Image 1 (cartoon, helix red, strand yellow):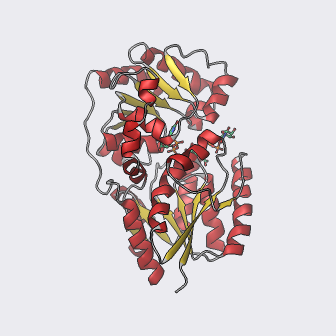
Image 2 (cartoon, rainbow, N blue to C red):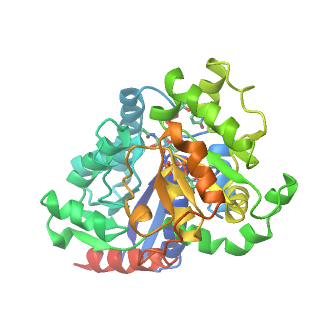
Image 3 (tube, helix red, strand yellow):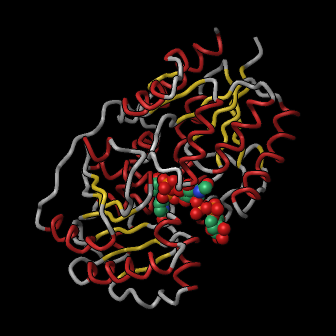
Amino acid sequence: MKPVAVHLVAGARPNFMKIAPLFHALAREDWCRPAIVHTGQHYDANMSDAFFRDLRLPEPHFRLGAGSGTHAEQTAAVMIGYERLAADERPDWVIVVGDVNSTAACAMVAAKLWIPVIHLEAGLRSGDRRMPEEINRLVTDAICDVLWTPSPDADENLAREGVPAAKIDRVGNIMLDSFEMLRATIAAGGTRAAFGLQPGGYGVVTLHRPSNVDRREDLEPLVAQLAAVARELPLVFPVHPRTRQQLAAFGLLAALPGVLITEPLGYTQFMNLVCDARAVITDSGGVQEESTYLGIPCLTLRENTERPITVTSGTNRLVRTAELYERVCDALAGRWPTGRRPELWDGQTAGRCVAALRRRAAA
Ligand code: UD1
Ligand code: UDP
């Protein structure tokens, strides 16, 4: 029998941690032939290549080279590139992950070519359509054939939107498979020590949401709060390229005394820092999940989250910019919930995806 050809689509930093465990698991199967499609949404070495190395992925089998642009430009560039490739290759299945522009773009292409498409990390909703990712989630889930969800809230969101239960498989949280795959390497890494930090003696910051960094009136008070926090707790801040551009444009790069500013870090380097952190300050989706998994206080600088289970079960709390300093003091004083790991966040999600795909491919 001809092996089932599967395209795994990845474009931006968080996508790589989501395709890696699945690629490795599918590559071990004799009935299936996975290939990685890199859309090129992220392209700097420290936003892309470093992750292929860390996650032990081969070179992408296909590169679309879409690059940056406005939402329409970027989405269109991915669609044009992927339409050509998918029409030529006609994979049996396409798997898209997460909620970035590459996700929605490739889902649309596959659906219109009548190639069955699966969304891994389906069903998450912030309820906030001002977030570009929320639009990508709604579009992707509406047109995918199969929806692989991480948590019960995601199943409930899909049911409310009228998605038949037969299209949904609850598989769990795939990102944590990457963590478990690399746990020993992460623990053995020397990033924290190289920065001269003590276990439990520092915080980690990541920021890249347009709602925090694109406008001076949002970013300037946030920088002031971080500077205040850094007087109580040393902070390490690997700066996302979007954020670096904005900090530079507003002349704020020098306004962070006590904050150790670095380039974006590779996955194992970054997680080595997170594992020993006293707290994490972030607006990242993935970091909310990783900190809940590790039981580390997470202060999320957003009005809402598409990952409510990290708040209801985990160590995540939504925090307004103006209260950041105060809330970090709460965490330092131990006034923070301990939380527990959600069900199926266990490092075994890729195996459940393989079993679900095999069942569906044979149907
Ligand atoms: C994108 C995703 C966001 C995700 C984030 C993960 C969308 C709509 N946004 O946001 O959901 O949380 O990735 O990090 O898909 N740039 C570089 N080098 C790169 C990549 C980007 O310098 O390798 C700069 C470019 O100037 C670019 C800007 O960063 O215009 C933003 O990149 P883009 O991919 O459009 O959005 P992100 O903010 O990275
Ligand atoms: N991450 C990383 N290096 C960094 C910052 C983040 O490896 O300097 C990892 C982090 O551990 C998580 C993922 O990137 O696995 C989250 O990506 P990001 O915050 O860019 O996107 P989001 O999850 O918000 O879409």
